[in-house]
Structure formats: C-alpha cells, structure tokens
Image (tube, one colour):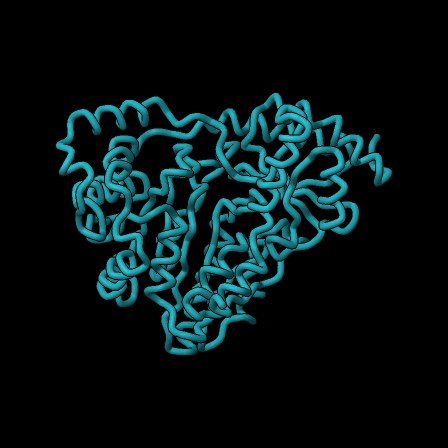
Length: 397
C-alpha cells in the first residue's frame, strides 16, 4: 500500500492535467483542429530566437564535461551573479550571487522554500482563487494551507482586512501569485502595501517572522503598460520564486531561481538551508545547460503583443455571447463567470469540444479558467461553439 498522504493526493489529482488528457482523447476522435483546448497554460508562442542561438552556441563552445557536469547546488556563480545584476538594473535592488539560488522552475523553487521554512503544523496562507498545487506543496512538508475567500466584489484584489483574520501564531508564510493564475489580475501597489502592513502588524503582535513568498512565473506578461510591483520594495521578509517557463516559453525546460534578500530575517540560514533542500528534494541543481542559456537571455522579452491580441479577441467574443469575464491585466488566462454550476458548465462545454477548467479547481466555484495561450485562429474558430453553449443558458444574443 502506498503512503496515506499520496493516496489523498492521487484521489485529488489535477483537474487541469485531467482536462489536458481529455483533450488528447477528443482530438483522436474528432481531429485536433476540431477541439478547442483552453485547459493548460502551455505557451504557444515560440521561444525568442536568442534562446535557440544560445543553446547552439553554448553546446558548441563549452567543454562537454564542464557543460554537463555537476556544479554547486545553488547553481553556477557567474549565472547567479548575472541574474542578480539584471534584477538590480530593473528594480533598483542590491543583490549579488549570494542572494540567488537557481532552481528547477518556480514550482521547484517554491518547494525548496517550503521545505526550508515549514515545521509540521505551520500554516501557509493563500488568497482564493489560487493555483491549487500550492495545497500539495504545503501538505508535502506537513504544513497546513489556509485559503482566504475570494474578494469577488473587489475585482479579485486580495483583501488585507480579511488576511488579518486568518493570521495566527502558527502562520509561517503567505504565497502571492502576481499576475494571478487563474484570474489574470495584477495585484496593485496599494494592495501589496496594505498586505505588508498587516503582516508587519502581526509579526510584532506574535513575535514571529511571516514570510511573503512571491510566485512570479507571469511577471513579464502584463498589458496596457501595467506595472507588476516588485515585492521586496514593500516587505522585508519577502522571498521570490521565478521561472522562465512563460516569459521565454520554456515550460518543459524547468529553469528558474529563488531570491533570498539579505534583509530577510535569518537570510543566511534560509539560503544555506534552501541549498540543502535543493539537493535533498532530488533536484540536486538546476539544469546545467539551461542555466547557461538563460544567463545569455536575461534581456529577452515575451511576445506580449501576441497574447494581447488573443486576450482582446477572446474577451470581445465571450462578452458578445453574453458571458461575464474579468478583463485580464496580465498572464494569459480569462476568468469567466459561469451561468450555473461550474462543474456542470465544464461538462456541457465538452459537448461542444470546448475544454476549460472549473473554478473549484482554484478554490473558487462559479467560474472557469480559459487559457488563451493558444493560436489566434483557434480562438476565432471556437467562438461559434461558445455562442452555442451560451445559447443553452439563454445568454446568446
């Protein structure tokens, strides 16, 4: 018999991945071109040409033993120094290689941080809706995830006053994902400032350190000139997890980093422990080739214009059908209110060959997430199917 913890995780599964597998099944039946799969946040925009060039150059010019060999569990010092310098240029920070730990994507980074921070029974807070894997990450280290209800009336900006009610002496961390998956909302500087004030107040009240873990795989995907706040400016006990999965369209390469600012409580101890966690979790170190590649591509940008074109077309098409959507500030997800039960809506959508993810998978029933990191052509072709679906609910105009 497998472990009871894994039995629970297996039973929960992943609705997002399950929908992805359903897409493959339907494509085999009806043809890929007739399936409108909006389930997975898998970038359809090619990686920048500089990435391909860097892969070729690094593999040709680097000694194979050096290229593919072990390095420090924290990553190549020269790569970490370049990442630190890039952050300093962009955000006016003062990091060096000793603040940067290269990781196996943002997911690997978050697991490293949680392994480093959590004792059994420690609480980690999140604002709904949130990426549901956070629950598995936290429980994997015997922590307790506590979700703060969605601030629907506040356009899904986190409610700092609600946060105050959820903090206890056992609270060890708060995870913020900005821009947010699944809503596409960017949390404003005012929101972050209010959250930081509550955390500082509660730290003083309980005499504890509460860490703000900033999960940032979508940082570069922001529209209409919107700024994504850099959280270390607002709260000293901030730890950052980043991934190039979305910004450089490299989700399968699993490459990212963690930032441990020097001003954090126990910063040196956290960094040293995180390096050990990187090893004992089985990552050992971030992929050697990809470390060298991203170090040459730090100034490359995602093709935000292509995602923006999709965003505008999908929002216009869905609202014209009568659906109510949150207009995304960033990322590549449309958060749409369902006219009935979200689980039932997803099943009805399948009959029209539309695959979306129910809001309850993000701890926020009554909505669906639609990933528009797909071809523009597929969005346009899907709109008649969405209109037919809307007609079943009496919405279609």
